[in-house]
Image (spheres, rainbow, N blue to C red):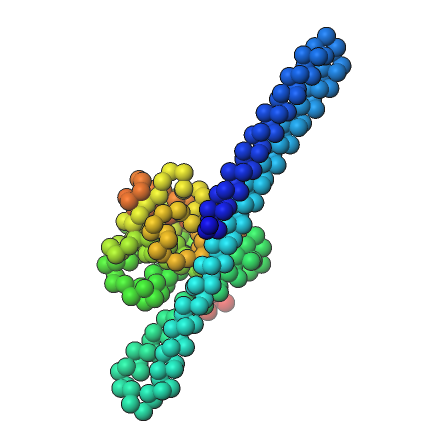
Length: 316
């Protein structure tokens, strides 16, 4: 019996057990009402006790089911993180052993290729570690705040993601500003905001499948500095649009099983947006019809230019 099947059986057991207890409580309460229907005090007391018992049973059942599901998500997270850590380490070790064993005979071009692969694996390893560390710090607001040009930051993240994922500009690009668009600037921690944007881009690319086409919009919209990432990937069902921002949550399905991940990326984006007084939300026309993720942060007024020094040629 698999772990997943065992947990489903446990959930079914606790739900069934809770329903049986509720039915039993209803039966006893009915007998109590029949026996004491002419006495007001016992009837009221019995009704209150019955309500308390029913409420306790329902809450206890809900709590147990949630705990079982949370444990299942945490186990999935541990398995995913183990894979995300082990795979690049194994790859780096294999390439290092090859370089060591064939140091004198390996062509220069092949050595450079191995170095590139190991650097990519190192980046992947650092990204996973960074996600885990950021999750542990979720809810702890950073004391560092400075003026951040979100468009410049988005452009930097787009270039970095293209390099990491070996994408062309046509596959992942930042949309140009329109004639009436203004630069989005916000007050925040550049490192945290960079991590949030990178997670949005990484999520869009991973779930685009073979046909990657991701557009990034960065501009001022009303009082909000907006980063919007649109893809043509798997899309989302309506009931998944809020769940995906929960810790460890991954959308069920065959594609999700094939794509490795920790279930932390979008949770980090949500936490970062909340810490900066903003929000993040998802939109989709349905499964298989792509998705749009929007990060909105409170905009700050444009920086005022420095005053020019007074002319020294004025007569005294």
